[in-house]
Image (cartoon, rainbow, N blue to C red; front, side, top):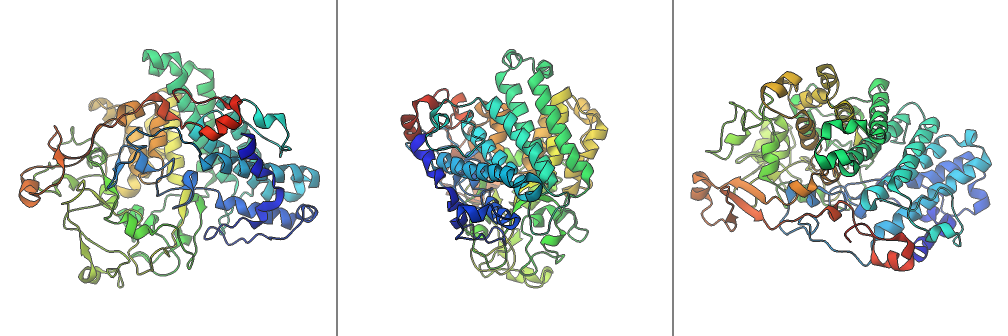
Length: 581
């Protein structure tokens, strides 16, 4: 590890790091060490760079939201593209190098540098920048835990010759405890109220604490306890560490929920289409029928900001709208009917005779994320909206279910006229809907049950935003229809957070990847209608009678963690390697 991590010790290079299209803050680029730590304003300037290190629409691997990064839904079971994804197929191998490793430690060094100098300067004098440093150190270490598991824990800006830099990795238990402690410290120093410029506040620390504690609590519950191995899942709450972590997830999320600073975006004019337009809110020009912009969005707790005129790395509308992002039949089937029941239990399910039949009486998020056959839609490529009325239908495109999986995406695609790469929507690093779902899941996993009042306060609020008439999730509904409350909570999370980089990490922490990931990736049912209208389908047909894109998928337990790159193991043999690699 020494050689790779040593690059982090060129101390004040932080001030020449650039992070375009993220924040309005511009760091000074020529200040010596003595100058940097001489005033509160300089601490603020130093902390500006942290905001370019979180997930974004497209950036480096660990930061990537909508390209093939370590958290990408393209590496999951529910999304596929025109070519096989080796990670989704479970066919990836140990890399010689991995830029994530060195980048994360370099950035951790900078957070440690600010924290150390804040102590010398006077913590009470620097406030928010110190809170931002604690938050970002926690954020970066959580990335290391999710990617690699155990990690060398560094809480000081160590000299390059420190023995700690060539030591064994600390256990993920130790690292996660430090992450949660750092988030508690961040909450002490961060401001109470959210800021319009997007800087962190206390709720950001609480929300991230809820995410981390739920992730690790469920990882511990489903990977490490003997009760899981014997199948006695409901008794796993006797594991004290699991209980401690899940309790932390509950209390941290509860602070956000009771704080009153955030709410689900639910515009009266947009109504049940609020979910659709949430992800493409901009301020540059009218971007939705209600003509509301980002100021109306009180749902994004942590976000990577983009401004009008900034250039995105990803041509997002072309990439995401009816292009190379294909939903699988498995994901389509996850959407409930409006009576709150799965399609195999609901009398409302309309079948598959015509391609749009399966969309009838379903969760509205199916309509908000997927294009139906014959649906009119808009892009930024000559077919955009100008009046935001039905008159725009004259300048629209028409979707066809024929091609690829038959399930085409529209989430993240703008409808207004804008040059390629210049869409200016923000990326939701963590939004309030996730907090509600984290709280509900933690409640259930802590007690092995959740009452209807708690469901109505959390999960059903998320469901109701897109489906005001859908039957809510209740214990009676679950019991009467032979459902699993755990699976219904997970279903809601999956549908709500699709294409936000959560699915593959969820499968890993639930220890269900080994079951879900090897499944074939199928498309539409190739019935009489498709046979007549798609006679030259280039794909084989699965035993289920569906268009078959990818088969022969595999998943081993070792895939739940990425392997450490070979160069790091050679530089520091004490690192060891993750199991199976």
